[in-house]
Image (cartoon, rainbow, N blue to C red; front, side):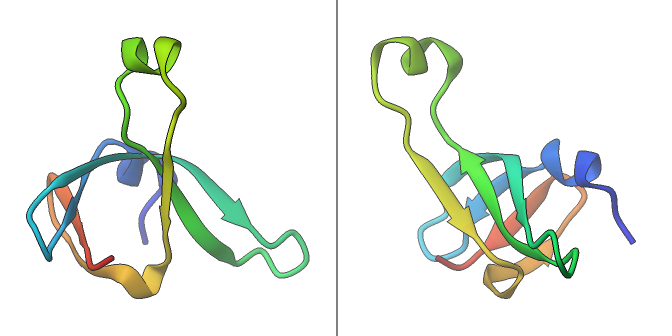
Length: 76
């Protein structure tokens, strides 16, 4: 088992192109079942968010191919 805080410190990397997508900033949970629907990744840096619209990216558990010590590999 793993805590959300453990996942939030890991970099999210797309296995298709090797690009770093960012880190998990939020989780959408079904309040009736308690199940996680998807993770939200914020991939813009703080100062860029001040001057440009933010883009959020999301992925589900099905998109995760591997959770490593430092990264989470996803296929999206």
